[in-house]
Length: 441
Image (cartoon, rainbow, N blue to C red; front, side, top):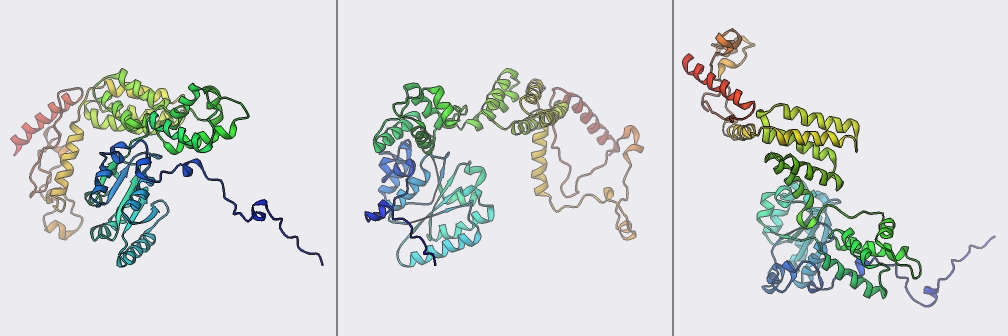
């Protein structure tokens, strides 16, 4: 019989040592106390919001809003240590109702022993409305102190009820000075300088785009790639990390500000500014179909019936891009932007729809008047359905002047066209029909 080979003993085992897996730089440099967190002085500085909270030894539920790599998870963990709370972390990406129930039950059991729980929920905006509502009871009775982290605007992504029970704190993207400080600490821990010339070092900071974790990942890539005594310039750095400098400035909520600037330039009838912002977003790698959808929205919201063709052109540009792809299809988007920017403006349709929606909520259960309802059965005919209805095409000038609103609601005016573009003609028609309606009543 052949004997099974024994595995070779490693040098670590022979020396009685445990093998320690390599740790990423981001883990090695994780702050041990709030004062070590860089780039968030408004929160953890001497006069910061969190510093003041900790001075009172009271910590309410919080929502951390900011881009990745700005310290949200680290700060939450340190807050738990500072307040002697048990730190529990879950991610909305991987957690469901059953997971939440288990976490809440564990927190209740912990509370009975006198131990509070800081529940950190990463990507909290990924939970649906019902899941977000499940936090309310345990927040209200103190079972957990919730700290939710989100990269999305909480005003749009989180329930109003949840927001009313938590304070939103904004984490800013790290500026160049903060990122440089992180790089310097990495060099100190690793005991060696980054093999970059001055220009490449500045580019490394720009490539991180306000993300502390990203700058450390880039630094690791550089150290791995460098041969002995090799120093990289900016061009070589770009080749090594296979990444180009970002166009969006996250410190100004780049994509959100640029799309806002594009929309407002269109609304303000400035085609040159509108083209500039379109070009910036395309150059930054924004999804062209996202831009196409926004241009369609502009055509409805800011032009509407002043030039109904604007919506046709915007949709055609979307279809053209879908057909041609990049870069050929981008010209169609530029053409659509020029059209909507130079078209006559009116938000009358937008306002009318808003008024109609409010009226719909007010009279949501009201039946239309019986004379405009069909009467397919004898009973419905006996009940007066369709009685008195006048077929407009048989009326003089194709207009009967009947009332179509529910009787209890009464006639309303939602749409008020402006004296611009095609809406000038529509206004004439509506004014004329108002006179005819009055005469025929």
